[in-house]
Image (cartoon, rainbow, N blue to C red):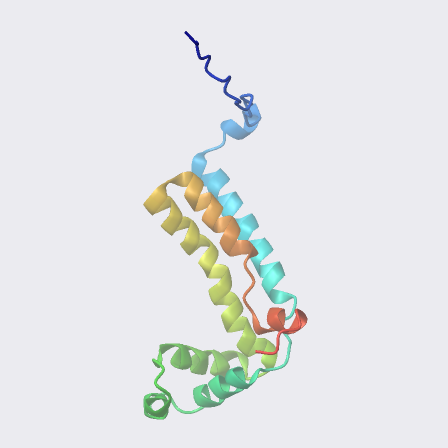
Length: 156
């Protein structure tokens, strides 16, 4: 009669990582707020490095549409099929900050940076604190600008 012996399980050693005592005494809103500000700062730095790049064709068309009056934008977009909210926001933005490449790209930068706290809130609300922190890190490090594609050598 043969006896079987269970294979020993390989487990990782448990590592107990604790924050310093002074850090644990800080209120939670302060540590999370500080983390969020740091992540938004990193996101701003990464997204603003190529802010003054040239317009791509679709960006130029968007800026052209947004330069019309607010009442004319929905009529112009009837042919394009896009919803008018972004164009209307860009119209107001252009009236305040101008129509240069840097200023129109800055609106997208603002929206991109605001995705960091929105992603953290969504992850936290749906899946817990760890998921919210991971979502904030991912949203902060994600750069989705036309200049990123251009630097990588993509043509479309």
